[in-house]
Image (cartoon, rainbow, N blue to C red; front, side, top):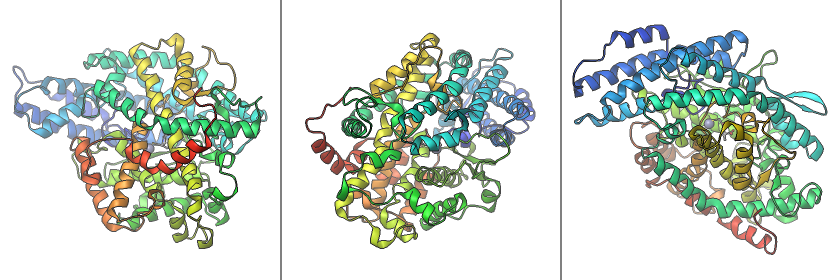
Length: 616
Ligand code: X8Z
Ligand code: ZN
Protein backbone atom coordinates (compact mmCIF):
# COMPACT_ATOMS: atom_id res chain seq x y z
CA UNK A 1 0.00 0.00 0.00
CA UNK A 2 0.99 3.60 -0.43
CA UNK A 3 3.53 3.28 -3.13
CA UNK A 4 4.26 6.68 -4.47
CA UNK A 5 5.70 5.55 -7.76
CA UNK A 6 3.69 5.57 -10.83
CA UNK A 7 0.51 6.97 -11.59
CA UNK A 8 -1.13 7.38 -8.44
CA UNK A 9 0.55 9.19 -5.74
CA UNK A 10 -1.52 12.24 -6.46
CA UNK A 11 -4.98 10.92 -6.25
CA UNK A 12 -5.70 8.19 -3.80
CA UNK A 13 -2.48 7.31 -2.17
CA UNK A 14 -2.03 3.65 -2.45
CA UNK A 15 -5.17 3.08 -4.34
CA UNK A 16 -3.54 3.60 -7.65
CA UNK A 17 -0.23 2.13 -7.13
CA UNK A 18 0.47 -1.46 -7.04
CA UNK A 19 1.86 -4.48 -8.65
CA UNK A 20 0.62 -7.47 -10.85
CA UNK A 21 0.78 -10.87 -9.78
CA UNK A 22 2.58 -9.48 -6.84
CA UNK A 23 3.64 -12.97 -5.90
CA UNK A 24 5.44 -13.22 -9.22
CA UNK A 25 6.94 -9.82 -8.69
CA UNK A 26 8.31 -10.75 -5.32
CA UNK A 27 9.69 -13.96 -6.70
CA UNK A 28 11.56 -11.86 -9.21
CA UNK A 29 13.06 -9.77 -6.46
CA UNK A 30 14.08 -12.79 -4.48
CA UNK A 31 15.52 -14.44 -7.58
CA UNK A 32 17.91 -11.57 -8.11
CA UNK A 33 20.53 -11.97 -5.42
CA UNK A 34 22.33 -8.89 -4.20
CA UNK A 35 25.72 -9.04 -5.92
CA UNK A 36 28.60 -9.65 -3.53
CA UNK A 37 31.45 -7.17 -3.10
CA UNK A 38 31.63 -3.53 -4.08
CA UNK A 39 28.63 -2.46 -6.17
CA UNK A 40 29.32 -1.37 -9.74
CA UNK A 41 27.65 1.08 -12.08
CA UNK A 42 26.58 -1.78 -14.34
CA UNK A 43 24.90 -3.51 -11.41
CA UNK A 44 23.12 -0.28 -10.49
CA UNK A 45 21.81 0.05 -14.06
CA UNK A 46 20.59 -3.55 -14.01
CA UNK A 47 18.97 -3.08 -10.61
CA UNK A 48 17.01 -0.05 -11.82
CA UNK A 49 15.95 -1.83 -14.99
CA UNK A 50 14.64 -4.77 -12.99
CA UNK A 51 12.84 -2.55 -10.50
CA UNK A 52 11.07 -0.72 -13.30
CA UNK A 53 10.07 -3.92 -15.06
CA UNK A 54 8.79 -5.65 -11.95
CA UNK A 55 7.01 -2.66 -10.48
CA UNK A 56 5.38 -1.66 -13.75
CA UNK A 57 4.00 -5.15 -14.12
CA UNK A 58 2.98 -5.35 -10.48
CA UNK A 59 1.19 -2.00 -10.52
CA UNK A 60 -1.54 -3.11 -12.88
CA UNK A 61 -3.25 -5.78 -10.77
CA UNK A 62 -2.83 -3.75 -7.63
CA UNK A 63 -4.47 -0.76 -9.28
CA UNK A 64 -7.40 -2.94 -10.32
CA UNK A 65 -7.77 -4.25 -6.77
CA UNK A 66 -7.68 -0.71 -5.42
CA UNK A 67 -10.24 0.43 -8.00
CA UNK A 68 -12.67 -2.34 -7.14
CA UNK A 69 -12.26 -1.63 -3.42
CA UNK A 70 -12.82 2.13 -3.84
CA UNK A 71 -15.90 1.63 -6.01
CA UNK A 72 -17.40 -1.27 -4.05
CA UNK A 73 -16.47 -1.22 -0.37
CA UNK A 74 -17.15 -4.54 1.36
CA UNK A 75 -15.29 -6.58 3.95
CA UNK A 76 -14.06 -8.76 1.09
CA UNK A 77 -12.71 -5.98 -1.08
CA UNK A 78 -11.13 -4.42 2.02
CA UNK A 79 -9.34 -7.71 2.69
CA UNK A 80 -8.15 -7.96 -0.90
CA UNK A 81 -6.98 -4.35 -0.93
CA UNK A 82 -5.16 -4.75 2.37
CA UNK A 83 -3.37 -7.85 1.07
CA UNK A 84 -2.44 -6.28 -2.22
CA UNK A 85 -1.30 -3.10 -0.48
CA UNK A 86 0.94 -5.05 1.87
CA UNK A 87 2.53 -6.93 -1.02
CA UNK A 88 3.11 -3.70 -2.87
CA UNK A 89 4.68 -2.09 0.17
CA UNK A 90 6.97 -5.09 0.64
CA UNK A 91 8.06 -4.73 -2.94
CA UNK A 92 8.60 -1.00 -2.60
CA UNK A 93 10.61 -1.45 0.60
CA UNK A 94 12.86 -4.08 -0.98
CA UNK A 95 13.66 -1.81 -3.90
CA UNK A 96 14.07 1.23 -1.66
CA UNK A 97 16.59 -0.63 0.51
CA UNK A 98 18.34 -1.94 -2.61
CA UNK A 99 18.51 1.56 -4.08
CA UNK A 100 20.30 2.84 -0.98
CA UNK A 101 23.14 0.42 -1.76
CA UNK A 102 23.85 2.09 -5.09
CA UNK A 103 22.76 5.69 -4.58
CA UNK A 104 26.13 7.21 -3.74
CA UNK A 105 28.18 5.21 -6.24
CA UNK A 106 30.46 7.47 -8.33
CA UNK A 107 29.97 7.49 -12.09
CA UNK A 108 26.23 6.78 -12.19
CA UNK A 109 24.36 8.17 -15.18
CA UNK A 110 21.89 10.99 -14.54
CA UNK A 111 18.92 8.67 -15.09
CA UNK A 112 20.17 5.84 -12.91
CA UNK A 113 20.94 8.24 -10.08
CA UNK A 114 17.56 9.95 -10.39
CA UNK A 115 15.69 6.65 -10.51
CA UNK A 116 17.57 5.31 -7.48
CA UNK A 117 16.53 8.43 -5.55
CA UNK A 118 12.94 7.98 -6.71
CA UNK A 119 12.98 4.35 -5.62
CA UNK A 120 14.37 5.24 -2.23
CA UNK A 121 11.76 7.92 -1.55
CA UNK A 122 8.87 6.40 -3.45
CA UNK A 123 6.76 5.01 -0.65
CA UNK A 124 4.21 7.28 1.02
CA UNK A 125 3.92 5.02 4.06
CA UNK A 126 6.81 2.55 4.24
CA UNK A 127 6.55 -0.49 6.48
CA UNK A 128 9.48 -1.90 8.45
CA UNK A 129 10.81 -5.26 7.25
CA UNK A 130 9.91 -7.22 10.41
CA UNK A 131 7.34 -9.98 9.71
CA UNK A 132 3.70 -8.89 9.75
CA UNK A 133 4.38 -5.14 9.77
CA UNK A 134 3.32 -4.38 6.20
CA UNK A 135 0.11 -6.43 6.65
CA UNK A 136 -0.72 -4.57 9.84
CA UNK A 137 -0.02 -1.19 8.25
CA UNK A 138 -2.02 -1.99 5.14
CA UNK A 139 -4.96 -3.31 7.14
CA UNK A 140 -5.01 -0.09 9.19
CA UNK A 141 -4.91 2.22 6.18
CA UNK A 142 -7.52 0.25 4.25
CA UNK A 143 -9.80 0.25 7.28
CA UNK A 144 -9.47 4.00 7.83
CA UNK A 145 -9.95 4.85 4.19
CA UNK A 146 -13.02 2.61 3.83
CA UNK A 147 -14.50 3.92 7.08
CA UNK A 148 -14.21 7.39 5.64
CA UNK A 149 -15.93 6.23 2.44
CA UNK A 150 -18.82 4.74 4.42
CA UNK A 151 -19.01 7.72 6.79
CA UNK A 152 -22.32 9.42 7.58
CA UNK A 153 -23.35 12.56 9.45
CA UNK A 154 -26.80 13.82 10.30
CA UNK A 155 -29.04 16.67 9.18
CA UNK A 156 -32.30 17.27 11.07
CA UNK A 157 -31.48 14.13 13.01
CA UNK A 158 -31.50 11.98 9.86
CA UNK A 159 -28.43 10.19 8.46
CA UNK A 160 -26.78 11.84 5.46
CA UNK A 161 -23.84 10.47 3.44
CA UNK A 162 -20.52 12.17 2.75
CA UNK A 163 -21.19 13.63 -0.68
CA UNK A 164 -24.65 14.90 0.33
CA UNK A 165 -23.41 16.47 3.55
CA UNK A 166 -20.58 18.15 1.66
CA UNK A 167 -23.08 19.71 -0.76
CA UNK A 168 -25.44 20.66 2.08
CA UNK A 169 -22.66 22.52 3.90
CA UNK A 170 -22.49 24.72 0.81
CA UNK A 171 -26.18 25.54 0.54
CA UNK A 172 -27.68 25.46 4.06
CA UNK A 173 -27.66 28.84 5.86
CA UNK A 174 -29.26 27.94 9.20
CA UNK A 175 -26.43 28.08 11.79
CA UNK A 176 -27.96 25.38 13.99
CA UNK A 177 -28.21 22.96 11.07
CA UNK A 178 -24.67 23.76 9.99
CA UNK A 179 -23.43 23.00 13.48
CA UNK A 180 -25.35 19.74 13.54
CA UNK A 181 -23.81 18.62 10.25
CA UNK A 182 -20.32 19.76 11.22
CA UNK A 183 -20.40 18.12 14.64
CA UNK A 184 -21.96 14.85 13.52
CA UNK A 185 -19.50 14.43 10.65
CA UNK A 186 -16.44 15.15 12.77
CA UNK A 187 -17.64 13.03 15.69
CA UNK A 188 -18.85 10.04 13.69
CA UNK A 189 -16.15 9.90 11.01
CA UNK A 190 -13.05 11.34 12.66
CA UNK A 191 -13.14 10.32 16.33
CA UNK A 192 -13.35 6.51 15.85
CA UNK A 193 -10.10 6.54 13.84
CA UNK A 194 -7.97 8.08 16.54
CA UNK A 195 -6.38 4.90 17.85
CA UNK A 196 -5.72 3.43 14.41
CA UNK A 197 -4.10 6.66 13.30
CA UNK A 198 -1.61 6.53 16.14
CA UNK A 199 -0.77 2.90 15.29
CA UNK A 200 -0.34 3.74 11.62
CA UNK A 201 1.99 6.60 12.55
CA UNK A 202 4.22 4.42 14.69
CA UNK A 203 4.57 1.62 12.13
CA UNK A 204 5.23 3.83 9.14
CA UNK A 205 7.77 5.89 11.10
CA UNK A 206 9.59 2.67 11.88
CA UNK A 207 9.60 1.92 8.16
CA UNK A 208 10.88 5.39 7.28
CA UNK A 209 13.75 5.03 9.76
CA UNK A 210 14.80 1.72 8.23
CA UNK A 211 15.08 3.56 4.94
CA UNK A 212 17.30 6.20 6.53
CA UNK A 213 14.76 9.00 7.01
CA UNK A 214 14.15 10.75 10.32
CA UNK A 215 10.42 10.07 10.08
CA UNK A 216 7.63 9.87 7.50
CA UNK A 217 7.27 13.66 7.34
CA UNK A 218 10.91 14.01 6.43
CA UNK A 219 10.46 11.33 3.75
CA UNK A 220 7.53 13.30 2.29
CA UNK A 221 9.52 16.54 2.27
CA UNK A 222 12.35 14.80 0.42
CA UNK A 223 10.45 14.48 -2.86
CA UNK A 224 11.13 17.95 -4.25
CA UNK A 225 14.65 17.96 -5.71
CA UNK A 226 15.97 19.78 -2.63
CA UNK A 227 16.58 18.95 1.03
CA UNK A 228 13.59 18.48 3.36
CA UNK A 229 14.67 21.61 5.27
CA UNK A 230 14.85 23.69 2.09
CA UNK A 231 11.43 22.46 1.10
CA UNK A 232 9.83 23.38 4.44
CA UNK A 233 11.45 26.83 4.17
CA UNK A 234 10.14 27.25 0.61
CA UNK A 235 6.55 26.56 1.68
CA UNK A 236 6.86 29.09 4.51
CA UNK A 237 8.29 31.65 2.10
CA UNK A 238 5.39 31.20 -0.32
CA UNK A 239 2.92 31.50 2.56
CA UNK A 240 4.46 34.84 3.58
CA UNK A 241 3.96 36.11 0.02
CA UNK A 242 0.24 35.38 0.05
CA UNK A 243 -0.60 35.87 3.74
CA UNK A 244 -1.56 39.60 3.48
CA UNK A 245 -4.13 38.70 0.83
CA UNK A 246 -5.59 35.99 3.05
CA UNK A 247 -5.74 38.35 6.01
CA UNK A 248 -7.65 40.92 3.96
CA UNK A 249 -10.13 38.29 2.80
CA UNK A 250 -10.57 36.98 6.34
CA UNK A 251 -11.28 40.47 7.71
CA UNK A 252 -13.85 41.19 5.02
CA UNK A 253 -15.55 37.78 5.24
CA UNK A 254 -15.84 37.91 9.03
CA UNK A 255 -17.47 41.32 8.77
CA UNK A 256 -20.01 40.07 6.23
CA UNK A 257 -20.79 36.98 8.30
CA UNK A 258 -21.35 39.22 11.31
CA UNK A 259 -23.72 41.40 9.24
CA UNK A 260 -25.69 38.33 8.16
CA UNK A 261 -25.82 36.30 11.36
CA UNK A 262 -25.32 38.86 14.16
CA UNK A 263 -22.95 38.92 17.12
CA UNK A 264 -24.37 35.82 18.78
CA UNK A 265 -23.38 33.64 15.84
CA UNK A 266 -20.33 35.44 14.46
CA UNK A 267 -18.57 38.12 16.48
CA UNK A 268 -16.93 41.13 14.79
CA UNK A 269 -13.56 40.11 16.20
CA UNK A 270 -11.72 36.85 16.82
CA UNK A 271 -11.76 33.70 14.73
CA UNK A 272 -14.51 32.80 12.24
CA UNK A 273 -16.82 29.94 13.20
CA UNK A 274 -15.76 27.24 10.82
CA UNK A 275 -19.19 25.84 9.93
CA UNK A 276 -20.33 29.17 8.48
CA UNK A 277 -17.94 29.18 5.53
CA UNK A 278 -19.83 26.96 3.08
CA UNK A 279 -17.55 23.94 3.31
CA UNK A 280 -17.22 21.10 5.83
CA UNK A 281 -13.54 21.86 6.34
CA UNK A 282 -13.69 25.63 5.75
CA UNK A 283 -11.11 25.01 3.04
CA UNK A 284 -12.85 26.86 0.21
CA UNK A 285 -15.48 29.52 0.78
CA UNK A 286 -16.90 30.11 -2.70
CA UNK A 287 -20.25 28.59 -1.72
CA UNK A 288 -21.00 31.60 0.51
CA UNK A 289 -20.23 34.12 -2.19
CA UNK A 290 -23.85 35.28 -1.93
CA UNK A 291 -23.12 36.40 1.65
CA UNK A 292 -20.02 38.40 0.80
CA UNK A 293 -20.92 39.65 -2.70
CA UNK A 294 -20.48 43.41 -3.15
CA UNK A 295 -23.85 45.14 -2.84
CA UNK A 296 -25.71 45.76 -6.11
CA UNK A 297 -23.59 46.90 -9.00
CA UNK A 298 -20.40 44.99 -8.20
CA UNK A 299 -21.99 41.56 -8.11
CA UNK A 300 -21.23 38.97 -10.78
CA UNK A 301 -24.84 38.31 -11.69
CA UNK A 302 -24.63 34.58 -12.30
CA UNK A 303 -23.70 31.36 -10.54
CA UNK A 304 -22.13 28.57 -12.59
CA UNK A 305 -24.09 25.91 -10.73
CA UNK A 306 -27.38 27.68 -11.52
CA UNK A 307 -26.38 28.01 -15.19
CA UNK A 308 -25.61 24.29 -15.41
CA UNK A 309 -28.95 23.43 -13.84
CA UNK A 310 -30.87 25.90 -16.03
CA UNK A 311 -29.36 24.41 -19.20
CA UNK A 312 -30.22 20.89 -18.12
CA UNK A 313 -26.68 19.64 -17.64
CA UNK A 314 -26.26 16.24 -16.04
CA UNK A 315 -22.94 14.91 -14.64
CA UNK A 316 -22.03 13.15 -17.89
CA UNK A 317 -22.57 16.32 -19.88
CA UNK A 318 -20.40 18.21 -17.40
CA UNK A 319 -17.56 15.74 -17.98
CA UNK A 320 -18.01 15.96 -21.77
CA UNK A 321 -17.79 19.73 -21.47
CA UNK A 322 -14.56 19.35 -19.50
CA UNK A 323 -13.14 17.06 -22.17
CA UNK A 324 -14.12 19.70 -24.74
CA UNK A 325 -11.73 22.20 -23.19
CA UNK A 326 -8.77 19.83 -23.42
CA UNK A 327 -9.75 18.86 -26.98
CA UNK A 328 -9.75 22.56 -27.89
CA UNK A 329 -6.08 22.68 -26.83
CA UNK A 330 -5.29 19.82 -29.19
CA UNK A 331 -5.32 16.89 -26.74
CA UNK A 332 -6.77 13.68 -28.21
CA UNK A 333 -10.27 12.75 -27.02
CA UNK A 334 -10.60 10.50 -23.98
CA UNK A 335 -10.66 6.79 -24.88
CA UNK A 336 -13.89 4.80 -25.10
CA UNK A 337 -12.85 2.92 -21.98
CA UNK A 338 -12.84 6.16 -19.99
CA UNK A 339 -16.57 6.51 -20.56
CA UNK A 340 -17.25 2.83 -20.00
CA UNK A 341 -15.20 2.38 -16.83
CA UNK A 342 -15.24 5.71 -14.97
CA UNK A 343 -17.50 6.20 -11.97
CA UNK A 344 -19.11 9.55 -12.70
CA UNK A 345 -22.03 9.41 -10.26
CA UNK A 346 -22.54 7.69 -6.94
CA UNK A 347 -23.86 4.15 -7.38
CA UNK A 348 -27.18 3.75 -5.56
CA UNK A 349 -26.62 0.25 -4.26
CA UNK A 350 -23.25 0.18 -2.53
CA UNK A 351 -20.62 2.03 -0.51
CA UNK A 352 -17.89 3.80 -2.48
CA UNK A 353 -15.22 6.39 -1.78
CA UNK A 354 -16.86 9.52 -3.11
CA UNK A 355 -13.83 11.78 -2.76
CA UNK A 356 -12.87 12.59 -6.35
CA UNK A 357 -9.81 10.94 -7.87
CA UNK A 358 -8.21 10.18 -11.23
CA UNK A 359 -6.73 6.84 -12.17
CA UNK A 360 -4.48 5.24 -14.72
CA UNK A 361 -4.97 1.53 -14.44
CA UNK A 362 -2.49 0.22 -17.02
CA UNK A 363 0.10 3.02 -17.19
CA UNK A 364 -1.02 3.61 -20.78
CA UNK A 365 -4.57 4.38 -21.86
CA UNK A 366 -6.90 2.96 -19.21
CA UNK A 367 -7.51 6.34 -17.59
CA UNK A 368 -10.62 6.99 -15.50
CA UNK A 369 -12.15 9.33 -12.97
CA UNK A 370 -14.03 8.34 -9.87
CA UNK A 371 -16.51 10.94 -8.64
CA UNK A 372 -19.96 11.25 -7.11
CA UNK A 373 -20.71 14.22 -9.30
CA UNK A 374 -23.42 16.70 -8.44
CA UNK A 375 -24.59 19.46 -10.76
CA UNK A 376 -22.97 22.42 -9.01
CA UNK A 377 -20.08 24.85 -9.44
CA UNK A 378 -17.69 22.94 -7.16
CA UNK A 379 -18.01 19.73 -9.13
CA UNK A 380 -17.67 21.52 -12.48
CA UNK A 381 -14.25 22.71 -11.31
CA UNK A 382 -13.42 19.29 -9.82
CA UNK A 383 -14.14 17.61 -13.18
CA UNK A 384 -11.58 19.86 -14.87
CA UNK A 385 -9.20 19.11 -11.99
CA UNK A 386 -9.50 15.33 -12.33
CA UNK A 387 -9.25 15.42 -16.10
CA UNK A 388 -6.02 17.39 -15.69
CA UNK A 389 -4.59 14.35 -13.90
CA UNK A 390 -5.76 12.02 -16.67
CA UNK A 391 -4.32 14.15 -19.48
CA UNK A 392 -1.04 14.45 -17.57
CA UNK A 393 -0.91 10.66 -17.15
CA UNK A 394 -1.52 10.11 -20.82
CA UNK A 395 1.03 12.75 -21.83
CA UNK A 396 3.86 10.94 -19.99
CA UNK A 397 2.85 7.40 -20.85
CA UNK A 398 5.92 6.91 -23.07
CA UNK A 399 8.28 7.68 -20.18
CA UNK A 400 9.99 4.84 -18.27
CA UNK A 401 7.89 3.63 -15.33
CA UNK A 402 9.69 5.62 -12.62
CA UNK A 403 9.22 8.85 -14.55
CA UNK A 404 5.47 8.37 -15.00
CA UNK A 405 4.57 11.07 -12.54
CA UNK A 406 4.22 14.80 -12.17
CA UNK A 407 7.35 17.00 -12.20
CA UNK A 408 6.45 17.26 -8.54
CA UNK A 409 3.13 16.37 -6.95
CA UNK A 410 2.04 20.02 -6.94
CA UNK A 411 2.29 20.05 -10.75
CA UNK A 412 -0.08 17.10 -10.97
CA UNK A 413 -2.61 18.90 -8.81
CA UNK A 414 -2.26 22.18 -10.69
CA UNK A 415 -2.93 21.24 -14.31
CA UNK A 416 -6.69 20.83 -14.21
CA UNK A 417 -7.08 23.86 -11.96
CA UNK A 418 -5.09 25.92 -14.47
CA UNK A 419 -7.61 24.93 -17.12
CA UNK A 420 -10.52 25.69 -14.79
CA UNK A 421 -9.22 29.25 -14.29
CA UNK A 422 -10.14 29.70 -17.95
CA UNK A 423 -13.85 29.22 -17.17
CA UNK A 424 -14.49 32.94 -17.63
CA UNK A 425 -17.81 34.59 -18.53
CA UNK A 426 -16.72 34.79 -22.18
CA UNK A 427 -15.91 31.08 -22.16
CA UNK A 428 -19.32 30.31 -20.67
CA UNK A 429 -20.87 32.24 -23.56
CA UNK A 430 -18.81 30.27 -26.09
CA UNK A 431 -20.09 26.96 -24.77
CA UNK A 432 -23.67 28.20 -24.57
CA UNK A 433 -24.02 28.30 -20.78
CA UNK A 434 -24.29 32.08 -20.40
CA UNK A 435 -26.24 34.52 -22.59
CA UNK A 436 -23.93 37.06 -24.21
CA UNK A 437 -26.10 39.86 -22.78
CA UNK A 438 -25.36 38.60 -19.25
CA UNK A 439 -21.56 38.84 -19.46
CA UNK A 440 -20.61 40.95 -16.45
CA UNK A 441 -19.23 44.34 -17.50
CA UNK A 442 -15.82 45.64 -16.40
CA UNK A 443 -17.38 47.22 -13.28
CA UNK A 444 -18.15 43.68 -12.06
CA UNK A 445 -14.49 42.67 -12.04
CA UNK A 446 -14.30 42.92 -8.26
CA UNK A 447 -17.19 40.51 -7.93
CA UNK A 448 -15.53 38.03 -10.28
CA UNK A 449 -12.25 38.27 -8.41
CA UNK A 450 -13.93 37.96 -5.03
CA UNK A 451 -15.78 34.83 -6.17
CA UNK A 452 -12.45 33.29 -7.20
CA UNK A 453 -10.64 34.45 -4.07
CA UNK A 454 -13.24 32.81 -1.83
CA UNK A 455 -12.06 29.47 -3.25
CA UNK A 456 -8.45 30.09 -4.23
CA UNK A 457 -7.15 32.45 -1.54
CA UNK A 458 -9.21 31.01 1.30
CA UNK A 459 -7.63 27.62 0.63
CA UNK A 460 -4.00 28.69 1.09
CA UNK A 461 -3.58 28.38 4.88
CA UNK A 462 -5.61 25.17 4.88
CA UNK A 463 -3.37 23.73 2.15
CA UNK A 464 -0.35 24.48 4.29
CA UNK A 465 -1.52 23.44 7.75
CA UNK A 466 -2.73 19.90 7.00
CA UNK A 467 0.84 18.71 6.60
CA UNK A 468 2.16 21.06 9.27
CA UNK A 469 -0.06 18.92 11.50
CA UNK A 470 1.12 15.63 10.00
CA UNK A 471 4.77 16.66 9.97
CA UNK A 472 4.35 17.36 13.69
CA UNK A 473 2.60 14.03 14.29
CA UNK A 474 5.25 12.06 12.43
CA UNK A 475 8.14 13.87 14.14
CA UNK A 476 6.60 13.28 17.57
CA UNK A 477 6.31 17.00 18.21
CA UNK A 478 2.55 16.43 18.34
CA UNK A 479 1.96 13.45 20.66
CA UNK A 480 -1.03 11.13 20.22
CA UNK A 481 -2.49 12.64 23.40
CA UNK A 482 -2.57 16.07 21.73
CA UNK A 483 -3.88 15.36 18.23
CA UNK A 484 -7.03 17.43 18.61
CA UNK A 485 -5.48 20.38 20.45
CA UNK A 486 -2.71 20.69 17.85
CA UNK A 487 -5.25 20.49 15.03
CA UNK A 488 -7.39 23.25 16.56
CA UNK A 489 -4.30 25.33 17.28
CA UNK A 490 -3.07 25.17 13.67
CA UNK A 491 -6.55 25.90 12.33
CA UNK A 492 -6.62 28.97 14.57
CA UNK A 493 -3.07 30.08 13.85
CA UNK A 494 -3.18 29.80 10.06
CA UNK A 495 -6.85 30.06 9.09
CA UNK A 496 -8.19 32.13 11.97
CA UNK A 497 -11.14 29.78 12.46
CA UNK A 498 -12.57 27.92 15.44
CA UNK A 499 -14.84 24.88 15.82
CA UNK A 500 -18.53 25.66 16.44
CA UNK A 501 -18.58 23.46 19.56
CA UNK A 502 -15.98 22.59 22.18
CA UNK A 503 -13.52 19.84 21.26
CA UNK A 504 -11.40 17.61 23.48
CA UNK A 505 -9.01 14.72 23.11
CA UNK A 506 -11.77 12.15 22.60
CA UNK A 507 -12.24 13.80 19.17
CA UNK A 508 -10.13 13.49 16.06
CA UNK A 509 -11.28 16.11 13.58
CA UNK A 510 -8.24 15.58 11.36
CA UNK A 511 -9.61 12.11 10.58
CA UNK A 512 -12.78 13.66 9.18
CA UNK A 513 -10.81 15.10 6.25
CA UNK A 514 -10.32 12.53 3.48
CA UNK A 515 -6.57 12.90 2.96
CA UNK A 516 -5.75 12.03 6.58
CA UNK A 517 -7.30 8.53 6.66
CA UNK A 518 -6.33 7.99 3.01
CA UNK A 519 -2.73 9.11 3.72
CA UNK A 520 -2.52 11.46 0.77
CA UNK A 521 0.15 14.11 1.40
CA UNK A 522 -1.41 17.55 1.22
CA UNK A 523 1.34 20.14 0.64
CA UNK A 524 0.87 19.30 -3.04
CA UNK A 525 -2.40 21.26 -3.00
CA UNK A 526 -0.74 24.27 -1.42
CA UNK A 527 1.92 24.21 -4.14
CA UNK A 528 -0.74 23.67 -6.80
CA UNK A 529 -2.64 26.72 -5.59
CA UNK A 530 0.25 29.00 -6.49
CA UNK A 531 1.54 26.96 -9.46
CA UNK A 532 -1.83 27.09 -11.24
CA UNK A 533 -1.59 30.88 -11.35
CA UNK A 534 1.96 30.66 -12.69
CA UNK A 535 0.82 28.25 -15.41
CA UNK A 536 -2.30 30.28 -16.17
CA UNK A 537 -0.38 33.55 -16.44
CA UNK A 538 2.18 31.89 -18.71
CA UNK A 539 -0.58 30.46 -20.92
CA UNK A 540 -2.30 33.85 -21.14
CA UNK A 541 0.99 35.58 -21.98
CA UNK A 542 1.64 32.96 -24.68
CA UNK A 543 -1.81 33.55 -26.14
CA UNK A 544 -1.11 37.28 -26.35
CA UNK A 545 -3.83 38.25 -23.85
CA UNK A 546 -3.64 41.93 -22.98
CA UNK A 547 -6.71 42.42 -20.77
CA UNK A 548 -7.11 41.88 -17.03
CA UNK A 549 -5.62 38.49 -16.21
CA UNK A 550 -8.78 37.03 -14.66
CA UNK A 551 -10.73 37.60 -17.91
CA UNK A 552 -8.32 35.48 -19.95
CA UNK A 553 -9.39 32.11 -21.29
CA UNK A 554 -6.89 30.10 -23.33
CA UNK A 555 -9.68 27.88 -24.68
CA UNK A 556 -9.03 26.78 -28.27
CA UNK A 557 -5.39 27.88 -28.24
CA UNK A 558 -3.48 25.03 -29.88
CA UNK A 559 -0.09 26.69 -29.39
CA UNK A 560 -0.67 26.81 -25.63
CA UNK A 561 -1.75 23.16 -25.78
CA UNK A 562 1.43 22.18 -27.62
CA UNK A 563 3.63 23.92 -25.08
CA UNK A 564 1.67 22.51 -22.17
CA UNK A 565 2.08 19.04 -23.62
CA UNK A 566 5.84 19.61 -23.84
CA UNK A 567 5.94 20.05 -20.07
CA UNK A 568 3.47 17.28 -19.27
CA UNK A 569 5.17 14.70 -21.47
CA UNK A 570 8.42 15.12 -19.47
CA UNK A 571 6.73 13.47 -16.51
CA UNK A 572 9.18 13.28 -13.64
CA UNK A 573 12.22 12.74 -15.86
CA UNK A 574 13.90 16.02 -14.86
CA UNK A 575 14.01 18.12 -11.66
CA UNK A 576 10.81 20.15 -11.45
CA UNK A 577 12.46 23.55 -12.12
CA UNK A 578 13.33 22.26 -15.62
CA UNK A 579 9.70 21.40 -16.27
CA UNK A 580 8.50 24.73 -14.89
CA UNK A 581 10.93 26.53 -17.15
CA UNK A 582 9.65 24.72 -20.24
CA UNK A 583 6.17 26.15 -19.80
CA UNK A 584 6.67 29.39 -17.87
CA UNK A 585 10.29 30.40 -18.47
CA UNK A 586 10.81 30.57 -14.69
CA UNK A 587 12.52 28.10 -12.37
CA UNK A 588 10.91 29.33 -9.14
CA UNK A 589 7.65 28.29 -7.52
CA UNK A 590 6.22 31.50 -6.14
CA UNK A 591 3.04 33.24 -5.04
CA UNK A 592 3.75 36.26 -7.27
CA UNK A 593 1.38 35.28 -10.11
CA UNK A 594 -1.47 34.62 -7.66
CA UNK A 595 -0.84 37.95 -5.94
CA UNK A 596 -0.78 39.74 -9.32
CA UNK A 597 -4.08 38.10 -10.38
CA UNK A 598 -5.81 39.31 -7.22
CA UNK A 599 -4.09 42.71 -6.97
CA UNK A 600 -7.22 44.75 -7.89
CA UNK A 601 -9.23 42.81 -5.31
CA UNK A 602 -6.59 43.37 -2.64
CA UNK A 603 -6.77 47.12 -3.23
CA UNK A 604 -10.57 47.00 -3.01
CA UNK A 605 -10.54 44.86 0.14
CA UNK A 606 -8.13 47.25 1.81
CA UNK A 607 -10.62 50.08 1.25
CA UNK A 608 -13.56 47.99 2.54
CA UNK A 609 -11.57 46.89 5.58
CA UNK A 610 -10.52 50.41 6.63
CA UNK A 611 -11.28 50.85 10.31
CA UNK A 612 -12.39 47.23 10.75
CA UNK A 613 -10.62 44.90 13.15
CA UNK A 614 -8.19 42.59 11.43
CA UNK A 615 -6.59 39.34 12.67
CA UNK A 616 -7.89 37.28 15.55
O1 X8Z B 1 -8.48 16.13 -3.16
C1 X8Z B 1 -8.59 16.95 -4.08
C2 X8Z B 1 -8.97 16.48 -5.47
C3 X8Z B 1 -8.46 15.11 -5.76
S1 X8Z B 1 -6.74 15.05 -5.97
C4 X8Z B 1 -10.47 16.46 -5.61
N1 X8Z B 1 -8.45 18.27 -3.82
C5 X8Z B 1 -8.15 18.78 -2.51
C6 X8Z B 1 -9.31 18.56 -1.54
O2 X8Z B 1 -10.42 18.28 -2.00
O3 X8Z B 1 -9.12 18.69 -0.34
C7 X8Z B 1 -8.55 19.35 -4.81
C8 X8Z B 1 -8.44 20.61 -4.03
C9 X8Z B 1 -7.89 20.25 -2.69
ZN1 ZN C 1 -6.08 16.05 -7.63
